[in-house]
Length: 91
Image 1 (cartoon, one colour):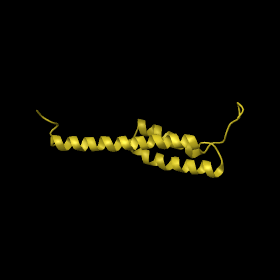
Image 2: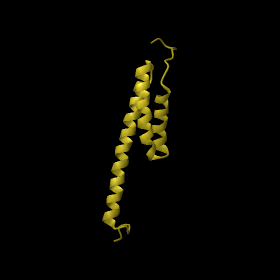
Image 3: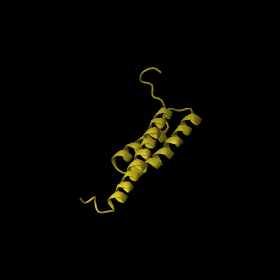
Image 4: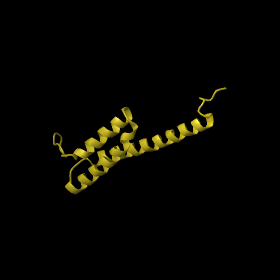
């Protein structure tokens, strides 16, 4: 593609990336809507033959990584709470 030519991109792809970034900064629970919107973006890009599919894939991968980290740290927190008995591990 020649320089200066813009490609139409799925608006869902941009929204998915914004949700992933907001997830990192603000609220960890936004990873689920980010995954949904990223899948919508991928489908929209394929059906309408517009750009944004790679951006949506990146947003979805990052969102799934955040889901894994959220589950891991949730399990870790519950495990520590059970081990410590809720007393903040007094010595």
